[in-house]
Image 1 (tube, rainbow, N blue to C red):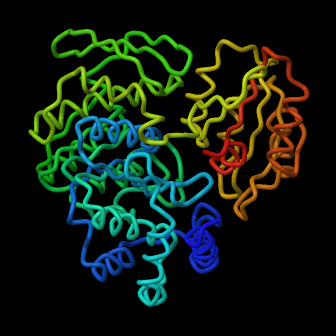
Image 2: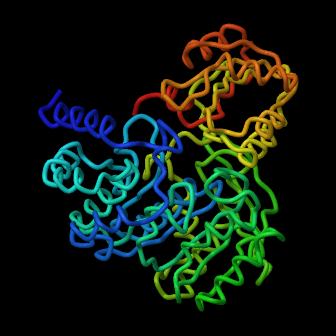
Length: 437
């Protein structure tokens, strides 16, 4: 282990101990304004103003879309930063240039140089990583950063940027204690990333939320388009290591066929949003790109951006599929894509967090699947036994396990070669079984 790796491990331990992280401890880490983020960035010389930004929010799909757009910019020879959250194994996953994580030496330098500032501001972990990302991107002179919000929009720590484009993938029920109890309320929070005069793309049109976006865009004099109005998926063909998708561009009637290495049927909705994002960037003159380059950017997203954890196969015979779906809409899309398996062929390793509303989530899970309930190794995790009790009340049968890997081992022992083992319910659960990169 190098000097920098040792120093980084100590810095990481110090930050985890000193700063509250929503990913680990839940609502206590949530900050409801931008004061801390702005204080950090002001002290750092406002690095967020030194590069262009594409800002992405939404309930589901924003991580996938972030990596799609990053691949597009990289294929267009732009030096591209990515800020995403949460992380799986190493918090450096949140801050990348292309596929390269921020080096341990840069993390150590940032914390060492600005420890007094950190102690004075007392930011949350998320607020600090946002500031660190923008500091690093400016230091490395990126051309553009693709920035994914955390849970919200209006009060999200990333909402200090002035982007060239805002994108909102969709609206669903998640984090309702913070964002609102109804879809229009949640949409209003997500729409907080719409900036005056900056175009916005909405991925999926919904009758309860479209008016919210239209009103705010009109008020802020921002042009607005709905991707689902512009493009329609005609067919998708799953293939080894990806899928081929045929899309109709409604305005011209042209059919576009392309391949992507991102698997999962729900990616077709993200691809529609991606295509309208490309068209909007073309219309604004920010990006001059032909269709072939836009499609080529989709072919090797995992490789060029280090995308992981979404519809990812990590073992064959039996197939072990991991997916970070954790809310009702995400899980519904996930299980809709598993129609090729009988329920009794499904072995589901499932875990969630204490602050999750369970009734809606459990109602989506297949009734006759085989369940292995567990808990991730984070304070926020719901104990496997408590999850088992709630699941039984919802009519699901299974056993509880103290460790996620123990649950996966049990599932593999009970599975036939043609069965499917699915690991889902929480990004923390998925993180514990992902292979190291």
